[in-house]
Amino acid sequence: MRKPYIAGNWKMNMTPSAGAAFAHDLAEAAKKAGADVKMMVAPPFVTIPAVVEALKGTGIIVAAQNMNDHKSGAYTGEVAPDMLKDLGVNTVILGHSERRSYYKESDEFINKKVLLAIEEGMDVVLCVGETLEERESGKLEEVLSTQLSGDLKDVKAEDMCHITIAYEPVWAIGTGKTATPEDADSAHAFIRSFVAKMYSADIAENLIIQYGGSVNASNVKALMAKENIDGALVGGASLSVEKFLPIITFDK
Ligand code: PGA
Image 1 (cartoon, rainbow, N blue to C red):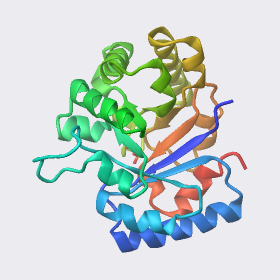
Image 2 (image 1 turned 180 degrees about the vertical axis):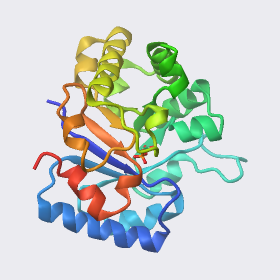
Image 3 (image 1 turned 90 degrees about the vertical axis):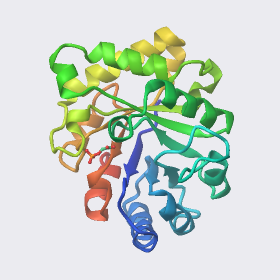
Image 4 (image 1 turned 45 degrees about the horizontal axis):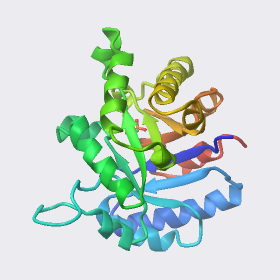
């Protein structure tokens, strides 16, 4: 059984004080509602310490949205994995489409970060997904295969338990357009079969694959009802209790 894994990617929102107050309210609301999914929030770097403090003892995972591909050194403006671990952060989102497109992160570069995260004993939420142009020109499977084989290069089978995949079609992120549950499920099924070929049927069966891209209270149930959709990576709708609570309690 794959336990549902719902994550909130705060992107460049929430100051430390606003983030801590929101995290506190979210944890209270989740507890009251009896949410029993695996839950994660990913605040901006500077907001992480306040959120870690606010969520202590709640079981809600605090993750980073990115990290550097080196352990330390002269990389002005960057954050190393051991800095995150020192705060109690053991999960990192890598390869988000905003980092791929705005900051030109390549599969090779993302792969370096994935390997470093694993070396550092961290869990990774690895984002993959196609643009509208790629989907419309029939390149969905080609794009996903290239991303998965590039980003997971040299990741050993025994480390795949530290990897979650987030399928996020670029055209659905922040646009209000969601993939239909059927389209999302078929992309997830492709990802699972590709991972089965790269590794094994067993590893693919246990792999958590989140869907991301305009997930909200009204579409989450239909998406989560699909066989291959095991969770959600939520942007906009993760920024208020009112919008995020119905998502983390989709099964209630
Ligand atoms: P969205 O973002 O829910 O606002 O579309 C999802 C994401 O980028 O992870």
